[in-house]
Each structure stands twice: as C-alpha cells, then as structure tokens.
Image 1 (spheres, helix red, strand yellow):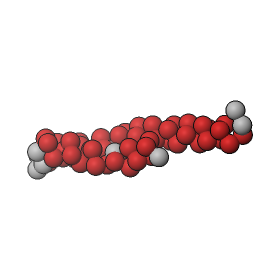
Image 2 (tube, helix red, strand yellow; image 1 turned 60 degrees about the horizontal axis):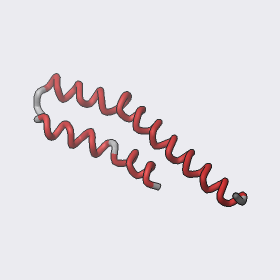
Image 3 (cartoon, one colour; image 1 turned 135 degrees about the horizontal axis):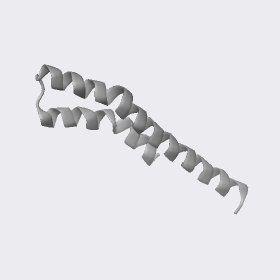
Length: 66
C-alpha cells in the first residue's frame, strides 16, 4: 500500500469513529432530554417523537456516509 491509500483509510476510520461518537453524544445529551420533555408534557404523539429523534440523527448519518 502506498501512502495515499493509508491516509485515505485512516481518514475513513476517523470519520466513521467521529460519526459513532457523534451519534452517542446526540442520543445522550440532546435526544433523551427532548424525549423526556415530550413525554412529560404529552403534547406530541409517539410517531412524531420518533421522527424528531430520526431527524436529529440525520447529521450523524451524513458523517458516517462521508
């Protein structure tokens, strides 16, 4: 393997690791408190809560793909 291949593989591994860490932090620090707030208020239905969580994880998905 030449240096370019090694660096490209390293960049992919770093990007994938960043995506996983980003997803974990998003779930713990942002999505869980929002879900708890929605559940306490009862103003938003279950499917809409799942949609909000999915949309908040969209950037994580993009990190993983790139």
